[in-house]
Structures are given as structure tokens and as C-alpha cells.
Length: 82
Length: 410
Image (tube, rainbow over the protein chains, first blue to last red):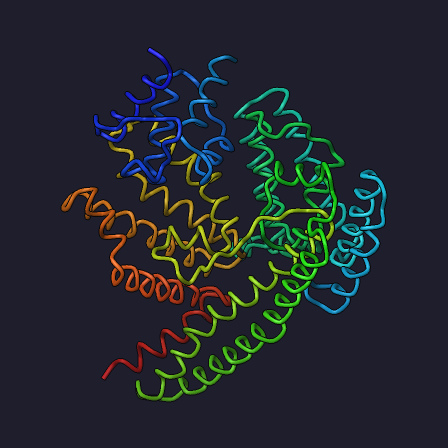
């Protein structure tokens, strides 16, 4: 299973919505319920699933308007490579 | 010397003209460092304060370097406890009145609260490998930069590094330069004319209300003065602080530093959480990133399913700490408590709507025009109420409310 599929499963669990289909361009505004609390729940779930850790500054950057699922995937891949 | 004073503006004009003539990056950095040191010189009153400032910054730098090499949560916490204890003493927090000797230490460091937040951010980011290439020279210039020394915006170290790497004037061409100076001029007008006018009217209204309140006034007599001070202080705060930010953001741009915006139409916020992304937003983001998120993340890691119900506790803790950070008297804790309540109420209302009407309805609801207008009005009045607890010690803040409550009694 590639990282996108795995990430999609995490989204289904966190948002309790199996209809979410992720693309690299998907933003927080396009996923119903992606608020500041769910964002942290999502980060915690991703950390558990991929066995990685996000830095405080990275979590903050992921909240920026120019961020999307693509940048999140890029960050996950970078951490998995390390 | 204060930002917005004639001396500051004259020196800024001179410095920006000279700065554009400095040929190399190394010299421009030295030039900015000299300007910052000169500004600092006017604000630090004695040798003891210089020593305390040096210890504060050097210890932060040394621990950040250690954390970068040997990441350790225990070391971070041990240093934070010492740092916060030193901060409480240096800021002379009123509860330390039990130890009068601590309050009589002749040390004054302007901008210490902001330095503390920048220091904590660099420590955490260093430990997590996010503050790279940290040198003592860069760190001192980051912490003591004249444009962010005494108040907001709270710039992140990584953003400072980006500007510091080039340090060339940001406004290019006559049009951009004119716009920057116009912004600085608007900032001066906001502080010296608009803000000062609102503060004068507020002070007069406050004094009049206290004078009236010493007798047995009716509600009809009290209400106009209470309404006046209720609206005047938020207007003063906005004019004064956003004006200050206009001057420092514009001034910093002239000397090659890009500072983040600190105000985006804050009195059009639709709830307290939205408010802190618009009013002193760099503080709001700092609270979110370095207080709220780590707190809530610990809770969510334990039990993700029930974490949201504990979020309210995190809001209260984060906002009370942020409130206390504003000043050394108990009124600021009340100010933070009110905002913690406001943030929790916002989340509770959203949760209620999602549970009873579904998430798609929440999206529709947020787009209804009258709902938006009501939400903005409620948030504005909520903030105006909270800021009643800002101008001074708790007794002073409570006096107008007591007079109003007394007048309400038949």
C-alpha cells in the first residue's frame, strides 16, 4: 500500500468518513471538519500509523493556507526516508 | 526613546538612507546591529539590567545549542523552570509580594516578555532540529532587533534568518518606498492622534464615572459613561498597537527585515478563536503552536476518541498562561480566563451544531449573512468586555462594573 492510500485510511478513521478521497491538491478547506482540533488528532494518528514524529514548527507550518495533502505526503516521505 | 517618537522617526529616516548605501551583507548586518544596540542603550537603565539581559540571552543560546546536539525533554524542562522563575522575578509579579526583597531588585528589561516567547520557540525548535545554523551573532540580532525588541509582532527565528541572509531593503522603487513611508506615517497618526484621542476620552470617561459612582447615581446617569469607556478602550488598543506595528513593520522593511502582519481586521472576527488569528495574530499563533498544540497533543496521544472533550481544559490553560504573560497583576489572569471561556464556548457551539444538525449544516450556517453579522457583533462585545480587565490592577478594572451593578439595583 502506498503512502497516499495509507494516509487516506487515516483520514477515514479520524474524520469518521469513508467517502473522503485524497489527492495531492486536497486542502483543509475541502475536507469537512478539518478544524484546529481535528488537525492535531490527524497529526497524532499519522504519527502512530507511520511511526514518525512531527516537530512543533512542522505542525504549525502544515496549518498554513498554502499547504495541502501533497505537502503533508512529502513531509511523511521525508521522515520515512530518514 | 519610543517607537513613534520624533527622534525615532528622524533616526529611522537617516538609518534607512545610509543603509541603502552600505555595499556588503556583512557591513549591512553590522549596521543593523549597531542600530539595535543604540536603541537598546536608550532602554536599559543600569549595569545590573545589562548583566541580567546578557545572562537571559546567553543562557538561552547555550541551552539551545545543547538541545540541538543532545535533544532532551528533561533538559528543556529543567531550563524552562529556571527561565520562567527568572522571568517572574524580573517582571516583578505581584504575588511575589510575600518576598519583598525579590520585588526590590533594580533590574528593568524592556521587551522581556517577547524575548521569553522567542527564546522558548528557539529552544523547542532547536531540540526538534527545526532551528538550524544557530550562531550567537544571529541569535543576539534576532532577540535584540530594534523593531521587535519591545513589543510584537513575534517573528519566528526561521523567518528572521531568511531576511538576515540577504538584508536588502524590501521596498524597491519609488512607489514601494512611498507606500512604506506612508504606512509608517499612518502608524504615527494612529498612535499620536487617533489612539491618544481615544485614550484621553477613555481616561476622562473613567474619571467621571468614578466621580459619579461615589454618590448614589441612577442607571440613566451611569450608563452613558460606562458605554463610553466600554467602547473607547478597545478603540484605543487597536489604534495604538496596530499603529505601532505599522511603524515597526514599515521600518524593518526599510532595513531589510520582513516582519509578519499582526492585525487583519480583528474587530470583524466571528468568534474568539478567529479573533486570535486576526488581533495580535503572531501572539495568537504562538499560543496555538507552543502552548495549546503541545498540551492538546499530549491528551490526544493518550486517548484520541475522548480528546476533544478535554480540549476545553487546554483552551483555559493556554489562555490563562497567555493572559498572565501580558502583565504582572491578577487582572491579566482574569483577561486570559475570559478568553479561555470564549474559545471553549465557540467550540461547544460548533460541536452542538454538528451533533444536532450535521456537519454539512455547519458549513451552510457559517455562510448565512445575518449569522455572520450577529457573530461579529457578539465577538466584538465579548472582547470589549474582556478588555475591561486590561487597563490596570483588578480593583481599578472592577470599579466601573461595580458602579454599573449598583446603579442597576432598584
